[in-house]
Image (cartoon, rainbow, N blue to C red; front, side):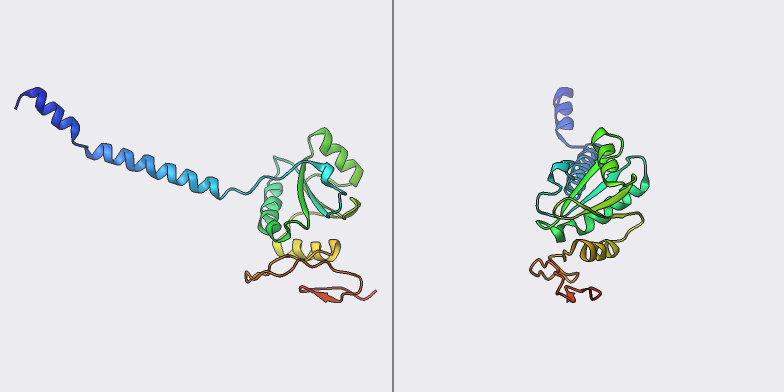
Length: 175
């Protein structure tokens, strides 16, 4: 076999280094796809949705504050349970829209503002929060219960009325 033929045969045989490179590339592509699939959905910053018939929770964020990301994580963990019942929105405190929202609702940055279906501020919630504490606030203040329970079973979306004393695990004081 000539030298040229030997070079062609050697080039045709994959080497360990080439196999390793391809495996590494495939691994990182799969890892990137999995990471992108697990990213939370984005939040709308369309504050015109406030007062359009659904209660809303608006996060006043500060991109430089760790508490903002903690609050977003809590919101991400529960928002699917309130799909169609509550608008989850955000505004940046460092924009004209954010500053106007903060002034109109007397709320500082890095807070959650709970607004009723008519757009009236009901409560301002400060960090830190847990999923359970935020769900309790939503139930007590906005009168909305989650669509599914913690064990994964789904239930009809329930609105609490003044006559209800115990619905979906939330109790109300009489009066």
